Length: 473
Figure 1 (cartoon, helix red, strand yellow):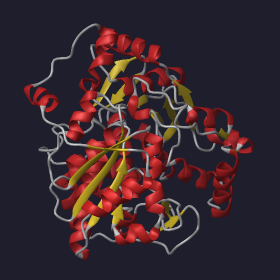
Figure 2 (tube, one colour):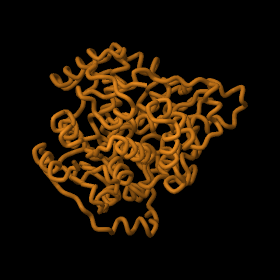
Figure 3 (cartoon, helix red, strand yellow):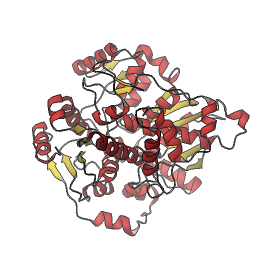
Figure 4 (cartoon, helix red, strand yellow):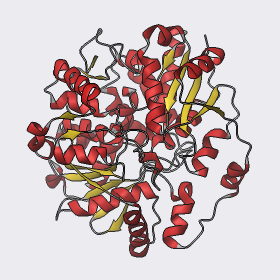
């Protein structure tokens, strides 16, 4: 299996090369030269596997340059009971909706599912090459803590994680800034997430600086994260169809609703669907920063400025420029790199690009529909789910449940991807339910721990200087 750039430049890469490179050398994103296919017989053979075993099978279709025994070891370490006590449980909450529990990891957010594998795989690849890697990333809340907890203390890796000042919950800040490991560098930028993401892309696009400073990525521009997330789509489908008679399983469709900011999580579902998993619909749930909802409803992609990006009660989705949309555009454009480049040239010149001619294909050929959720919707949904099932969901998951409700169909299970534990967003839960969530002693200690963070302006030169002073070489 080889990986090519959405913009057509560079030589095809192996999985390990894509893992270490992050952003392609021509500024595009790496995608499989061809998606692997999984037929019904193979899915049934996978039904009785544990999560680490299933991860080995699915990721083995992508990471063909990693010996299977080695890959099995990486997956066993990433998804061990010590890391995930209960990997990906499914919990019905009424109204034809089931939650897919992705927040059982160390940072209580779905990002752990891919990041724990990424941490194992990066260390493995660097040990084989004898190299070092300085991870440069941006987070709107959960990516940063998941990455730092997966990579902390690793000898060959340093992490430089950008976050927007004042735009994360106190819990999210504590999970990141309380880490005291020497290889973890938290950097709070005076701006919004998109400013942080732009800084990452600018430095990653400077090939001389990228190579001299050994820069890599853990944001969802890193293809390894996308492929690791594919695994839980297969797992969820298998668990949702376990009770069906064997004769009814082949081709049985489910729908997935995905709270979306950077389009990485739902892109993994798009890949799974392309591999043959029977997915009827992929329901994209946006918050008030609903640039992606606008695109999938109208065909026009019009990112907002930093000043227009709202601070909401689902802060991990406060994103107006979705990095992974380029991978979808590549497929929408018939895998024509010239059309992709033209779209991004148009975006740079006009602030938008237009695919309205392809609009019927979004829900038809690709199965993607979308909707928007507001703060009032989140509060009402948290109350309703708690009243109906006794389950407390976080505000991002509430966005998913709210939008999913409009697309529930008889006979088609609606699986909503849970994004985080509600404890991470206690203020919103208190506003919705009038209760304060009880925190474990461990979590209370986390919130009280001293924090270590460097604050900088939204300034590329300042970031370059900081990285040069502390990067591994």
